Length: 226
Image (cartoon, rainbow, N blue to C red; front, side, top):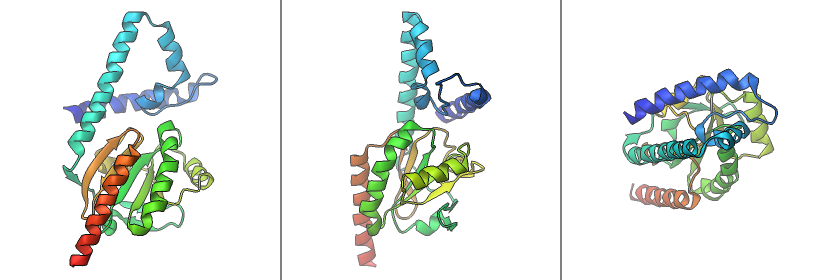
């Protein structure tokens, strides 16, 4: 039921956002998920005009949203396997199938140039990649289908992102990963293809680094045994 609610709500929400995209007020920012819209100037103005009882109701709804997101994360950990998808890297045009990366830990992160949380995470992901890629970690950044390709390419170059970035032009990658609609959304995939973490929202980098280090250690032990 949670997943049906998530899909229906996200579909209605995305349509309303896209319908309004060309009607933004001066200083207003577009948003593609609830986390971004809380920071939207129009949202803040509306909250200021609300009576106290409605503000409490709104707070309760936002709390429920966070609980649902947390529940989705808990339900996803260790319960599924990585889907059959291919990534076309924008830096060199290589086409890479996810299953061909199966002998190493893979971090697949869905992001957008309009997502503040995603922008905040990029320096941490770069540091993580620089520290652990030589040991076997692969990170793939999947730009959402609504993100203009030229903007994704420009930001990738501006931020000097070293890990591969792919454009999900038709949304097929997001659909394959349980219909991702919120950003950032991240999947940690163990060697062999098992999804051991599904995180909606900003990452706990210390916890993530520990999980990846454990996977790298386990994969090295396994390779030595073979």
